[in-house]
Every structure is written in structure tokens, then in C-alpha cells.
Length: 125
Image (cartoon, rainbow, N blue to C red; front, top):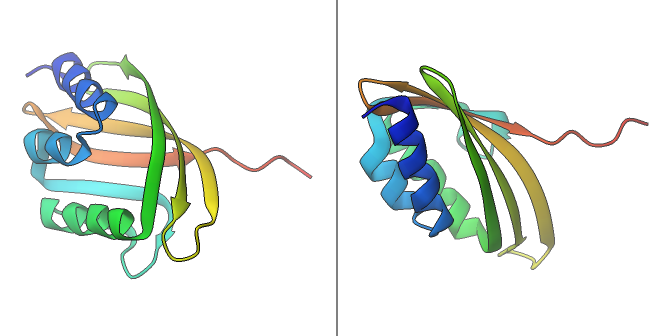
């Protein structure tokens, strides 16, 4: 698959809420996933599909997503970006959250080999 085809498939699956299906069908075994900040007990950079699965399991165990809007993809030759806007709550305390993130993906040999998440910065003081 081309980068544009991978991007279109990822966006289509995410719009249907099929995030795990997107991960299982489009991610390479040696994917590198980079968060903007340290993740509890996971670190900031996660290597390998099994590690990304664990990160996803942690997210699902600790958060309830009530809505997710997916914008994009924005495609170049080997990379593409998607904007995710989420609303939900933390399972431990019910605290509501809203977040917007940009995910930048790198594709090689028809698979996503790198994902990096950028979060909206708080307003300057």
C-alpha cells in the first residue's frame, strides 16, 4: 500500500472507532511510538508492536472516550498526519477531559513504522 492508502485506511478505521483494528492491520512489528510526555510505567518512547498494544491497553483501562473526531489525513510521500479531538473521562475519578492531538505517521513498505503524538500547548501566560 502507498502512504496515501495506509493513511486513508487508518482514518476510515479510526472514524468507526476501530483503533485496535487499525493498529493490528497497519502497524509494522518494529513500530516506534513517541508520546509528547512520559506515560505512567511506559515511558515516552515505545518500541515494537507488543509495546504499543500495552500502551493501548493502559489507555483503555484508564479512560472512557465519549467522542472522537478525526480530521485528515494530510499526506506526503512517506508521512501523513491526522488530527484527533477527544472528549472523555478518567475511569479512576470520573474527571472529564478534552484533548486535541496531532499524530504524525511514517510509512515504509506499506506499514506504519513510526507514530509521534503532538498535543495542543496550553495558552501562554
